[in-house]
Length: 107
Figure 1 (cartoon, rainbow, N blue to C red):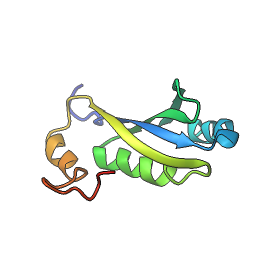
Figure 2: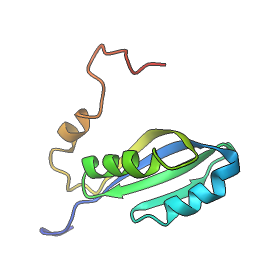
Figure 3: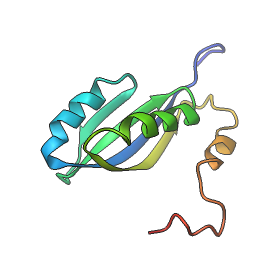
Figure 4: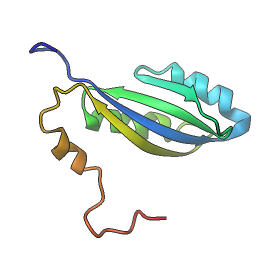
């Protein structure tokens, strides 16, 4: 990627969805810019890919467009990919991780 090109980030997530609304949910999410869904083996879950120019933007899109969609019962980010131009990506990602010894996020 040459200088001046926009960095690229992709978050992969699992979404638990209401089975009765699954097709509608997928159609709505797939219609959104930078969001794509895919099938998983578990019927009540779908895979979601969310693109952005930064980790923060992709995460915000996941929270504001996927997580709140009617029929989405829960969303879990499971992967992160960058195009290699993300200087400081490790520091940016740390903002989304729990502090060391913080167990408040554990189930």
